[in-house]
Amino acid sequence: MDAATQPDDMLYVGGAEALPAARAFCAWLNDADVDAGARLRAVQNAFVVALANSRLCAAPLIENLESLRVLIAIQPEVLNYVLVGGDAPDLDNLAPAFALVNNTLFEKVAA
Image (cartoon, rainbow, N blue to C red; front, top):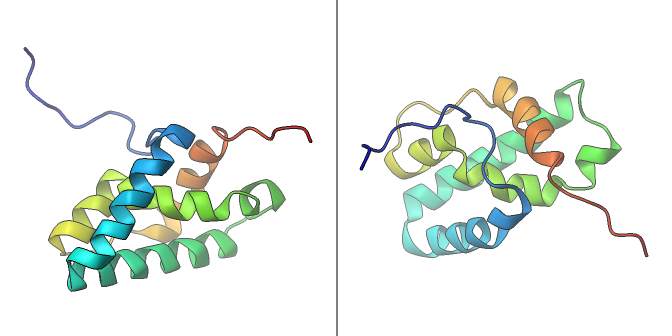
């Protein structure tokens, strides 16, 4: 058995399949730990602002903004900051790339 290692891809977090677990994590964290919950909310808010200020901010990303806002909670750098504290991730640079990579995982279903 190989030792656990940091994944090479720090942006992809599992796509739409990861949403239920990410939502449950966010809900649990907000109930369980006041400090970590506050850090999570701050990161999610900063994510939205950074994405809104980026050149990539366009309708296809905005359509999935709430899902992307939830998924950012399980991105490794964000997860470490939320649970441990320390220096906040650079969301101005992380948010656009994260949104671009993870937004491609959502498919529209024709009505």
